[in-house]
Length: 286
Ligand SMILES: Nc1ncnc2c1ncn2[C@@H]1O[C@H](COP(=O)(O)OP(=O)(O)O)[C@@H](O)[C@H]1O
Ligand SMILES: [Mg+2]
Image (cartoon, rainbow, N blue to C red):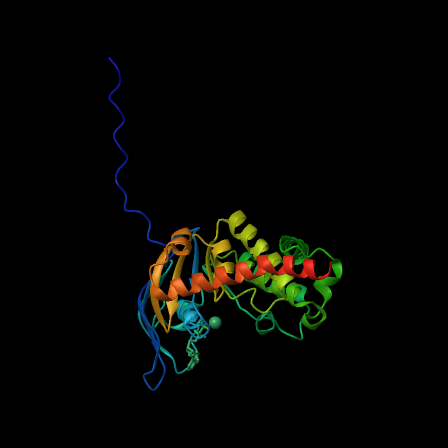
């Protein structure tokens, strides 16, 4: 007689997504809404994008997620980060989340760097704090962290931020953000302040790091062409509201909301102009 088939595994509830934002509203002291009733979620290991024109509330949303809103701004609704409610949470609740759960890379790397400290030391700090390394082990970890962001010249660790290029500074900011081995990396326009040629390098780097580490990514940009290269799912924001959410391909090829349709159309128009431009100039120089 054959053995009875194994019982099916008990139906466990799927794990809650790493980040769950529900009805997030952020208002100024005089009651002006900056973000209104925004909901989205990011699963562990997922790459998710927030896109919208400048001023649409993307940065305010990302700051609310980690409880870093400017004084005077008030959040309501719910943000659960690795199961912890961050809306209205005390700093003592938020502090352990910043780093190991979520780290942010900002648009302007200089805002994240201490101008008076050598960058190697700044990269070392989160590694020491979160991984408890010291001495030679810490030095090695810093070298590895710099190599991971493709900074291998020995002079870099000894440099001050102003001695590096914009692209190198953003790589340092990324290394610092990764030092705590976050489960979610929030990148708020990480390539916007960089030269176009460097933008693509940093994007490729982020793509590789997220893949290798299995990190979740919340990638924020005003640039649909940039976002669509790196994320699987997108929420489109306009004037503080989430107007459309979907898989990247669906949003690009079948945008539903009128504002998304305009974004896609203008990205396509730019693409067409770029395609046409080299032909035109090479004909002119002939
Ligand atoms: N601390 C603040 N106080 C008042 N208004 C703010 C503050 N921070 C941002 N805003 C306003 O909130 C809106 C959304 O800003 P933001 O989230 O930075 O937009 P973006 O989508 O470009 O990142 C903008 O109108 C901005 O001027
Ligand atoms: Mg912004």
